[in-house]
Image 1: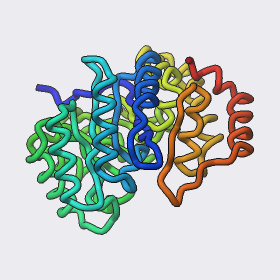
Image 2: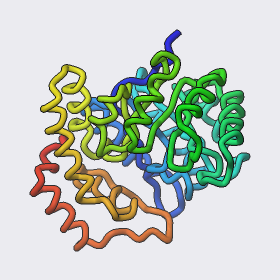
Image 3: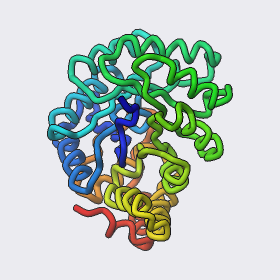
Image 4: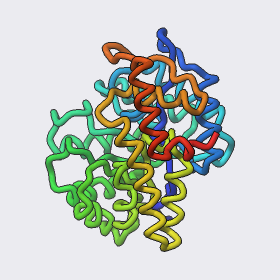
Length: 298
């Protein structure tokens, strides 16, 4: 059976919650509906965009449950279970097993470069043994080893199908995609390089901006697959203007853009500061001038 289980565009889903760390279910429902209406294949829940490093497991579980509830049958859902403590990871895997997901994924252990390469491989071996679903590993700057070696080690683990690659090194990307004669499910990470990832063999992509401009990302994917590279690049240019407008701001500001599509972004964990009205007005003006607002199909 092929390891290529995920193809297309997936949102790295924002976690939307109130000051008490309880998920705002109405906002999650609107975001799920908005993303699916505009062509996304599914959701990557609880990753970096989902604030995995700062949210308690309570909130992360509520987010997964809400996405699972509001997404219709056939929607692919990946649950990111990485956390700072192994017991939290194991707890999230148990929960994902109970809820039922299409895959679990995880950043490297402790989300830092604290562990060496062999220990990181052992970590993925451990979580793969606990998961009832296929597992996606991560390639991030945390890895200091040769990434092709890492891809080979990872794919040798039973129940591991591939990688989410979040480094903009597309020579390394191409070499990883050659592992196992290409039967390795690789999802592109950097939103601003979606076309680059597709050109080097990505099966799909997971990204933050796909929450906000899903139709644009889906069209990039479809245009590229049809062989219309110029149209794909045009879409990439438009998507990158969203990146330009928000890059360098905290996640609260990224989430605040959801107001444009009528979704209450909720709260963001302190010490993150919610953007001022003046700041958001400037960002919205920049998005409007770049033609991004017309891409946000309500």
